[in-house]
Image 1 (cartoon, rainbow, N blue to C red):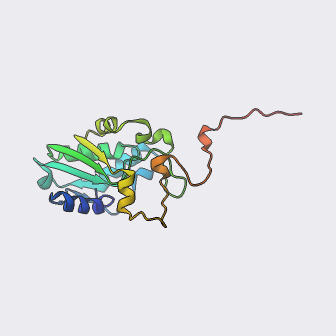
Image 2 (cartoon, rainbow, N blue to C red; image 1 turned 60 degrees about the vertical axis):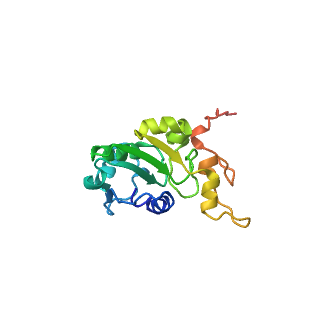
Image 3 (cartoon, one colour; image 1 turned 30 degrees about the horizontal axis):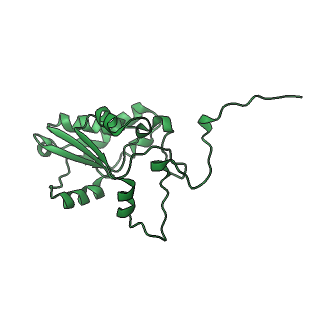
Length: 181
Protein backbone atom coordinates (compact mmCIF):
# COMPACT_ATOMS: atom_id res chain seq x y z
CA UNK A 1 0.00 0.00 0.00
CA UNK A 2 1.53 3.26 -1.04
CA UNK A 3 2.63 5.07 1.00
CA UNK A 4 1.73 3.64 4.41
CA UNK A 5 2.94 0.12 3.65
CA UNK A 6 6.08 0.86 1.63
CA UNK A 7 8.59 0.51 4.47
CA UNK A 8 7.04 -2.79 5.60
CA UNK A 9 6.94 -3.97 1.98
CA UNK A 10 10.67 -3.38 1.56
CA UNK A 11 11.41 -5.44 4.67
CA UNK A 12 8.93 -8.17 3.75
CA UNK A 13 10.35 -8.50 0.23
CA UNK A 14 13.90 -8.60 1.58
CA UNK A 15 13.15 -11.28 4.18
CA UNK A 16 10.85 -13.42 2.00
CA UNK A 17 12.83 -13.20 -1.22
CA UNK A 18 9.68 -12.15 -3.09
CA UNK A 19 9.98 -9.34 -5.63
CA UNK A 20 8.70 -5.91 -4.61
CA UNK A 21 6.46 -4.34 -7.24
CA UNK A 22 4.28 -1.27 -6.93
CA UNK A 23 0.95 -2.68 -8.14
CA UNK A 24 -0.93 0.39 -6.91
CA UNK A 25 -0.05 3.94 -7.87
CA UNK A 26 -1.01 6.58 -5.32
CA UNK A 27 -2.32 10.03 -6.13
CA UNK A 28 -0.47 12.20 -3.60
CA UNK A 29 -3.09 14.94 -3.77
CA UNK A 30 -5.55 12.84 -1.76
CA UNK A 31 -4.97 12.64 2.01
CA UNK A 32 -5.52 9.88 4.56
CA UNK A 33 -8.96 8.41 3.85
CA UNK A 34 -9.49 6.66 7.21
CA UNK A 35 -9.90 9.98 9.05
CA UNK A 36 -12.71 11.27 6.85
CA UNK A 37 -15.95 11.71 8.82
CA UNK A 38 -18.31 9.86 6.46
CA UNK A 39 -18.03 6.47 4.76
CA UNK A 40 -19.08 7.85 1.38
CA UNK A 41 -16.22 10.37 1.49
CA UNK A 42 -13.75 7.61 2.52
CA UNK A 43 -14.94 5.39 -0.36
CA UNK A 44 -14.64 8.17 -2.92
CA UNK A 45 -11.18 9.08 -1.58
CA UNK A 46 -9.93 5.52 -2.09
CA UNK A 47 -11.09 5.56 -5.72
CA UNK A 48 -9.29 8.85 -6.31
CA UNK A 49 -6.19 7.91 -4.36
CA UNK A 50 -5.23 4.51 -5.77
CA UNK A 51 -4.95 3.13 -9.28
CA UNK A 52 -4.06 -0.53 -9.94
CA UNK A 53 -1.36 -1.44 -12.47
CA UNK A 54 -3.05 -4.29 -14.34
CA UNK A 55 0.14 -5.42 -16.09
CA UNK A 56 1.75 -6.12 -12.68
CA UNK A 57 -1.32 -7.69 -11.01
CA UNK A 58 -3.03 -9.76 -13.69
CA UNK A 59 -2.65 -13.49 -13.10
CA UNK A 60 -0.50 -12.96 -9.99
CA UNK A 61 -0.70 -14.02 -6.36
CA UNK A 62 -0.31 -10.73 -4.48
CA UNK A 63 0.89 -10.01 -0.96
CA UNK A 64 -0.44 -6.59 0.01
CA UNK A 65 1.22 -4.87 2.98
CA UNK A 66 -0.27 -1.98 4.93
CA UNK A 67 0.41 -0.28 8.24
CA UNK A 68 -2.98 -0.97 9.82
CA UNK A 69 -6.62 -1.87 9.36
CA UNK A 70 -8.91 0.57 11.17
CA UNK A 71 -12.51 0.02 10.04
CA UNK A 72 -11.73 -2.48 7.30
CA UNK A 73 -13.69 -0.65 4.62
CA UNK A 74 -10.63 0.76 2.84
CA UNK A 75 -8.85 -2.61 2.88
CA UNK A 76 -11.99 -4.23 1.48
CA UNK A 77 -12.14 -1.78 -1.42
CA UNK A 78 -8.43 -2.23 -2.17
CA UNK A 79 -8.65 -6.03 -2.17
CA UNK A 80 -11.59 -5.78 -4.58
CA UNK A 81 -9.62 -3.31 -6.73
CA UNK A 82 -6.62 -5.66 -6.93
CA UNK A 83 -8.84 -8.64 -7.78
CA UNK A 84 -10.60 -6.48 -10.40
CA UNK A 85 -7.19 -5.85 -11.99
CA UNK A 86 -6.78 -9.61 -12.42
CA UNK A 87 -4.93 -10.85 -9.32
CA UNK A 88 -5.68 -14.52 -8.64
CA UNK A 89 -5.02 -14.30 -4.88
CA UNK A 90 -4.67 -11.41 -2.43
CA UNK A 91 -2.91 -11.96 0.89
CA UNK A 92 -2.86 -9.09 3.42
CA UNK A 93 -0.03 -8.52 5.89
CA UNK A 94 -0.31 -5.72 8.45
CA UNK A 95 2.82 -4.24 10.04
CA UNK A 96 1.28 -3.70 13.47
CA UNK A 97 -1.00 -5.63 15.84
CA UNK A 98 -4.80 -5.34 15.45
CA UNK A 99 -6.10 -1.90 16.49
CA UNK A 100 -8.61 -2.72 19.24
CA UNK A 101 -8.87 0.61 21.10
CA UNK A 102 -9.10 4.27 20.08
CA UNK A 103 -6.12 6.60 20.32
CA UNK A 104 -6.68 9.68 22.48
CA UNK A 105 -3.15 11.03 22.00
CA UNK A 106 -3.18 12.56 18.55
CA UNK A 107 -4.13 9.88 16.00
CA UNK A 108 -7.71 10.37 14.89
CA UNK A 109 -9.06 6.83 15.29
CA UNK A 110 -12.74 6.13 15.71
CA UNK A 111 -14.56 4.83 18.76
CA UNK A 112 -14.15 1.19 19.79
CA UNK A 113 -17.46 0.23 18.20
CA UNK A 114 -16.09 1.33 14.80
CA UNK A 115 -12.74 -0.49 15.09
CA UNK A 116 -13.07 -3.75 13.19
CA UNK A 117 -10.46 -5.62 15.28
CA UNK A 118 -12.28 -4.70 18.51
CA UNK A 119 -15.36 -6.50 17.24
CA UNK A 120 -14.21 -9.29 14.91
CA UNK A 121 -11.65 -12.10 14.93
CA UNK A 122 -8.76 -12.06 12.45
CA UNK A 123 -10.56 -14.66 10.33
CA UNK A 124 -13.79 -12.60 10.38
CA UNK A 125 -11.78 -9.53 9.28
CA UNK A 126 -10.13 -11.56 6.50
CA UNK A 127 -13.56 -12.66 5.31
CA UNK A 128 -14.95 -9.10 5.51
CA UNK A 129 -12.11 -7.59 3.45
CA UNK A 130 -12.17 -10.50 0.99
CA UNK A 131 -8.51 -11.52 1.33
CA UNK A 132 -7.26 -15.07 0.89
CA UNK A 133 -5.22 -14.71 4.09
CA UNK A 134 -4.59 -12.05 6.72
CA UNK A 135 -1.82 -11.76 9.29
CA UNK A 136 -0.75 -9.01 11.68
CA UNK A 137 2.65 -8.34 13.23
CA UNK A 138 2.58 -9.27 16.91
CA UNK A 139 3.07 -6.67 19.64
CA UNK A 140 6.40 -8.31 20.55
CA UNK A 141 7.41 -8.26 16.88
CA UNK A 142 6.54 -4.57 16.65
CA UNK A 143 8.55 -3.76 19.78
CA UNK A 144 11.49 -5.75 18.43
CA UNK A 145 11.31 -3.95 15.08
CA UNK A 146 11.37 -0.61 16.92
CA UNK A 147 14.41 -1.62 18.96
CA UNK A 148 12.51 -1.80 22.25
CA UNK A 149 15.12 -1.35 24.97
CA UNK A 150 14.96 -0.88 28.71
CA UNK A 151 15.12 2.91 28.47
CA UNK A 152 12.49 3.24 25.75
CA UNK A 153 8.74 3.00 26.17
CA UNK A 154 6.01 3.22 23.60
CA UNK A 155 2.31 3.78 23.99
CA UNK A 156 0.59 0.58 22.87
CA UNK A 157 -2.91 1.47 24.07
CA UNK A 158 -4.50 1.12 20.63
CA UNK A 159 -3.26 -2.50 20.54
CA UNK A 160 -3.77 -3.46 24.19
CA UNK A 161 -6.49 -1.19 25.60
CA UNK A 162 -4.09 -0.23 28.44
CA UNK A 163 -3.58 3.53 28.46
CA UNK A 164 -0.68 5.36 30.13
CA UNK A 165 -3.09 7.90 31.63
CA UNK A 166 -6.60 7.69 33.07
CA UNK A 167 -9.32 8.56 30.56
CA UNK A 168 -13.08 8.46 30.27
CA UNK A 169 -14.90 7.42 27.11
CA UNK A 170 -17.72 9.96 26.94
CA UNK A 171 -19.74 7.63 24.69
CA UNK A 172 -19.90 5.08 27.51
CA UNK A 173 -21.00 7.52 30.25
CA UNK A 174 -24.61 7.08 31.29
CA UNK A 175 -26.46 10.36 31.82
CA UNK A 176 -26.89 11.13 35.51
CA UNK A 177 -30.17 12.20 36.99
CA UNK A 178 -30.31 15.87 37.91
CA UNK A 179 -31.51 16.44 41.46
CA UNK A 180 -32.88 19.88 42.35
CA UNK A 181 -33.56 21.07 45.85
